[in-house]
Image 1 (cartoon, rainbow, N blue to C red):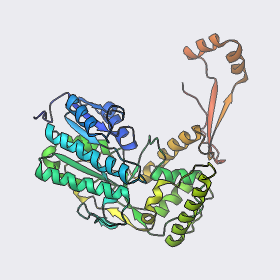
Image 2 (image 1 turned 60 degrees about the vertical axis):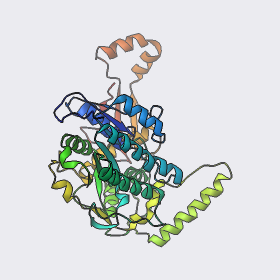
Image 3 (image 1 turned 120 degrees about the horizontal axis):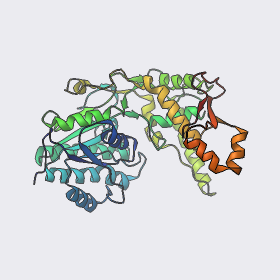
Image 4 (image 1 turned 90 degrees about the horizontal axis):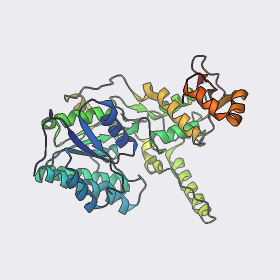
Length: 400
């Protein structure tokens, strides 16, 4: 059965699985509001489609009859063997098999964790299965290998996009690079848990939907291929941390490099302490990113020549993690301060006393003033650790 439509045909329907996360949410937002292409996307919740349930996947896709499906769902990087296997491997493979049956393109989002460590790593330099692999890496690597098998033997039309450390707005969880930003802003990173000269690749989440849209419209070029979707140049982890510190005008972290054996021993010690605390009913966990503690001390930069030599044109060629830092810092510090997660970013609200009296005693008159636009009743000043607010941006009426 084939339901594929040509690239120029209108009214295409796509399914995005994992649409509540940073990557999936960015993809959904692009197709809903960032492009004029007549493409509808649906992002079913786990109640409608659980990636762990083959029957859910089959029934939903067969009922929807989409023109393409995108999988951006992942298990937590520190999930146990069963959850990692079901979410990162079985789910994507079950989706792929239905996509092959429907003869529709399948876009799979994978991870740089499946590739070797080192500089300038190409798409072909996969890790080997070893006992030391994390559950996350093992399951993602298994999925990549099976997708390749399905492409070669069962006619699956797929493209695999491999991301490194992803940065972007609207991450509802504190994870990945945003975990690092949070730790710096919260002044809970006293020193540097890396070593000088260690470089990593970063993936700009804002660019990703443009690439997906392009490869959906050019299947002949991109089918059966995998791409390292990263910024062209690697970034030194220590320099990025110190740049964020400079933006925030903080005293920490100090530029003191903790050796890996000491960091590893410290991680074990804290894990023991947290385990003891749980016996007293206090629940706390180490950040899941510490699964990759070793990677903080080893360079991994991905080669993206294959991407740049394709027909895809970068919509924001000058954007890097550095150019977007101010935007990211403001967005996340505002978000975390509203959630009372950090105190680094202070929002001072000055309310006119006349407004308070009207609010208590004459709310109907207050509402009328607000509705007709004549009421400017309070102003908000944003301060980062005692910095003087910018004269143009510091005091603006709060928009309703």
